[in-house]
Image (cartoon, rainbow, N blue to C red; front, side):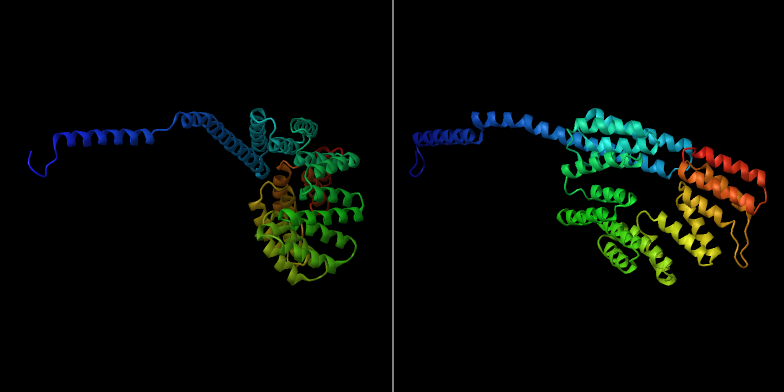
Length: 389
């Protein structure tokens, strides 16, 4: 070999060393047997977690669809379509209960859907099953059950269930609020105020919307003939949350100002309330007050627009029909238009407001139409619409 070139032996040694180094590198890059064992143990856990997330997402989607069906049913004026939507909502909630027996949201949603269909006893049975499945640890089930008992007139049992709801979750603001409304209806204003103050304290801990609590406190002040204190609570209610949550506070405050003669401020507050959530009450109140203020044409316009926005609202339909039986100045009553609107009002699947619509229609036929036989017939249909009331 030439001088300076590597010998055959040295080349062989170098090649062998290179092969050994590459083998060591490959060996170091491969996982050890212990690492492979750990990975095989973690794989089932990861798959289990993934399956749980998929099941939770499927449950959330079904509950969302069920709630939407129920809300669509509330807005549907046709009785057949309304009942079909409620049945679809009921079916979705039952699917969730079969797949996730401890899902409290499904029991609550199903009970509310059954209540919408006036199936109170069946709703109570669903809530009993929900309490058993969740071992009495779901506060929302207790609260909904308490509200049902309150509607059935069993105040004692309702109080027990409200107490159970708060024991399960001391930060459940809606339980305090609903219990306070029960005590207010029972005439226990001091107890109602105490519960609402506790609700405010609970809201501070969880940072949840509390505008409705301020509204309840304001109405208590109104019952005590203290409008200044009521205004202060209403202002806090308006300032406490986002604009959509403050609609009831604005509407109630506007009604207070209307009753105390502040027409301009009342109208401004009503206009703001029309843009918030649950604005149908604001539309109804503003239209009614415009007629009381002598603006009959404006009142009809507002109620007409409201009836288009909320076609399934029996109270708005009845108020709009009744508006055409009034006259003021150059604006005259029109019984033909009123009859058509009353027919639409009583066709809405709303037993409570159906009776009021029949009553208003009967009075109109008696006093304005002078059709006494028709008036008697409408009064009788009103009694049939709610014979137990």
